[in-house]
Image (cartoon, rainbow, N blue to C red; front, side, top):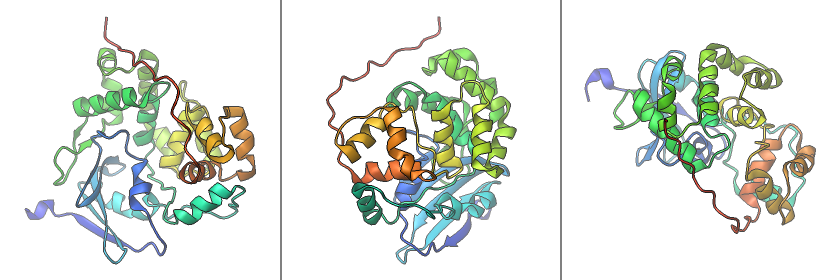
Length: 305
């Protein structure tokens, strides 16, 4: 490998069990996400950072140390945030398990943490595309747009891509969104978010309530979308995805043995105030799974007229 392509490296010793795959897995938007990869070397992320494009490879050594390797102008920024990305800022203070299933999950999954990517648009755009559609449809649309309007990620990983920049998202023609299956309402929200990307990235330095308010000030960004971003970019342990098609039913089944609705989920999680996303996630890890007996969605087709 030529010297100019040698990576920058950082070794991180977390001091506690760490399930790297589970922590980073929430950053993958579907199995074919071009900005995320896994192979025998570790987990790969292609990202636009405040210092430029970068690629991060995260691997676990036999002694338990985590090694990050990074390429591109954003390499130092990515390595500097490696501990936070892996949940190093995740604060469990005040968390009490009020349900046996949640207590059991905490013991069974000691390496699970809520990571903090510090990249708002990186999670916001996929969340907007995922609004009110099936995962299969949303992931396919995001994948198509990244392949067409993104760019190759720096470093040696073949076919790893960077998502479009904010400027590139703004410039995508409406018919290209439609061709990717992204409806006009969602594509308009994507463009609005990209137009104020700088202000949105400032959410990383704001108190969490102010960050949520800034996100939700964008027309088309509601509670569910803001929560999806806060969980990933801001490491928010108290932002469950209320409004999700499955979450209330799944958590209800895991903890109570039957379906509940969103209003009931709010009541159920209230004792976990400050840690509601954490509690919901642990419930899904440790509780019984809801039987699959409902009808499947029919995927719509969106084509330009």
